[in-house]
Image 1 (tube, rainbow, N blue to C red):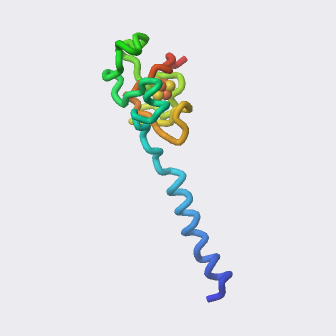
Image 2 (cartoon, helix red, strand yellow):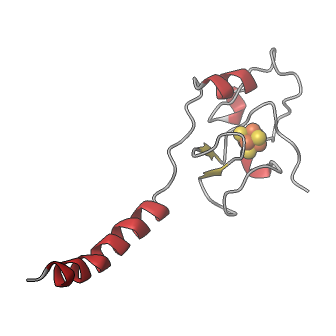
Image 3 (tube, rainbow, N blue to C red):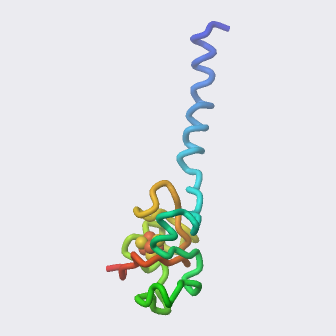
Amino acid sequence: MTSRRRFISLVPLLGAATLARAQAPAPLVDPKDPTAAALGYVADATKADKAKFPKYAAGQACSGCGLYQGAAGSASGPCPLYAGKAVSAKGWCSAWVKKA
Ligand code: SF4
């Protein structure tokens, strides 16, 4: 097989691998990540440190935050504050802003 033919035969595989990587869900933010820790991020909003972050109010969660970019009903999704990571829809951090 010529190298050109071999290359052409591999193109669909490379495309599939690229597509799979593009669709892979981003890893969840580690609450111990320095940015997450500074903002008080927790994967379960009910576990927010209410003493340290008194602005937290019951019912607030990433899914209701204006910065949350996950699809409606998704378990997790991107947040611009944590590039390359996903936050839990049930999570919370002190940058929470009410979704418009
Ligand atoms: Fe969740 Fe909003 Fe904080 Fe992002 S900014 S982690 S979506 S509460």
